[in-house]
Length: 130
Image 1 (cartoon, rainbow, N blue to C red):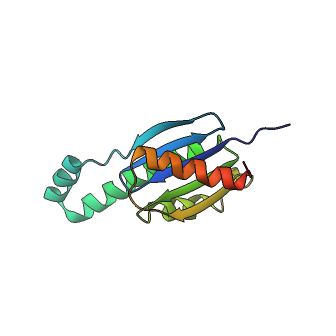
Image 2: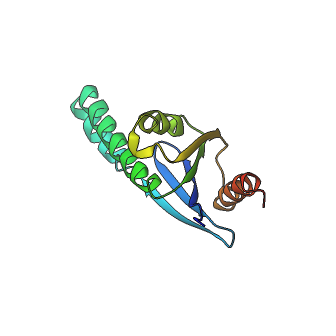
């Protein structure tokens, strides 16, 4: 019997917390966007257009990193307080590489690490009827 690999990803536009769910524990990993405040200031001093281009490029790289992680799972819940989760979902939903992965999107508040883990545990426990 194949055991489902499940993960919750709390994310906003600057970082993502990947919380792997299994019955025993919840392991987590953090991914940060590489578009720092300092880079934003430097780009903005040159031109607002350059800043937006650089920001979009870094945001694309950030979403790509998260997408690569999602490929390792069968079932994923994207959650968080901003539109970042929906933007990521919109980028990957039509990609064939993600066609066998169940991906859900849910709004949540800004949460502590323990609350994030509880959110993921509750979501998959209900889904798995544990």
